[in-house]
Length: 312
Image (cartoon, rainbow, N blue to C red; front, side, top):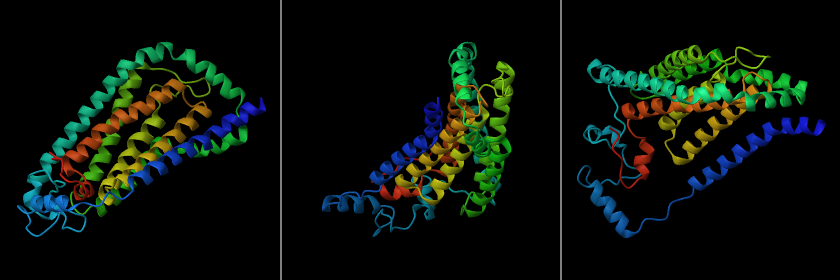
């Protein structure tokens, strides 16, 4: 019995260590220097850069393409708009609203599709696991997790989104309206899509936490809000493949932590927790797509790549 208790406790550091190790390995591979370009590559690069900017190479030392308005129309740089001109940012604001609303509808549809089998048959997995964890719970460890669990609470994630919106709105050189608006839209879409799902399924949580329902809100909010914050931080201040890996690894660690806390503390059924992780990912994808649609592809990727992918 004691061995099982402490194995359950050890699952948290083991999971965090595994995620950290995988992230470090992937980041090291991504940071390996690329093979030196040969003469043919340099000639090809010079020919490619000659029509637009004679005498300049498309490398990290070159002037950012975003300073050349002509390249913006070809989708080679992030499409930056002047926040002072309503005629420029208003269409982008409409695009963000449309993509956000469509993402909320799509997430509701996906969770509605997989909801009936989970609600009708999930207890066959949930109840035995719930009993086993309760029987093997270590009370001091549960007290620690009760505090750490708050990272996914509603007001905690909303507060983090508000703080990130304010900071990113100041630090972004242009389109300062985009981070606050994207994060605010995420709050609205997540809130009302979740209410609609709960109204439809009305699934009660474990006896110790009957308000926990399908899908679990904590894992959903961690993936959605911290994932969107990490994406916007990465694309504006890094843009490198290594930075992308660290951003994904950080959000994955937070999601694992939140899922572990919710299950160990019996805040939700296990199937609801897994559903919450999926739900957060389905909600996050359209917001990342909307940011890229409006702000364009990441600049660091353009500086390294031999050719750019159109951002529009």
